[in-house]
Length: 166
Image (cartoon, rainbow, N blue to C red; front, side, top):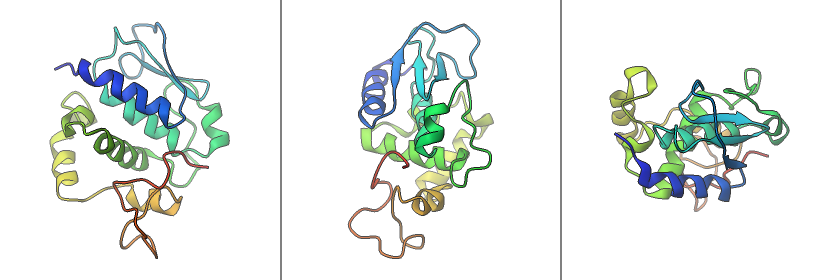
């Protein structure tokens, strides 16, 4: 199922938080259909894009990288292996917060076409308020949550203190 109506709000959100995103023709074979990481930003081919929510997930990967590494991210995965709190779980928690900020249906982000057939399990986990990666987002100061942050203040996940890691 295509979610074309969600493409422009997602595109605009990603640009609005400070991640470079541009429409560009892409080859048929990319890690995610219609999406590639290039020069620290996202290239998207709207004609090849199958799941607009994948844009939020890839933006999440870039957002949780330290700024210096984010600028160097290229191809399908940023080089985050040795960076604390810049992994898959943090990217997912970031993307979930972004989807809620945009008011998207959960299955736009966590869709049947991804997540190795585990999208139903992930949706249930998020529905119950279990957020893998939240601890990492708190530790790098992007959000706050009881149990992970000493003084939460007025902002609590899924609201974000900031959308990009320093």
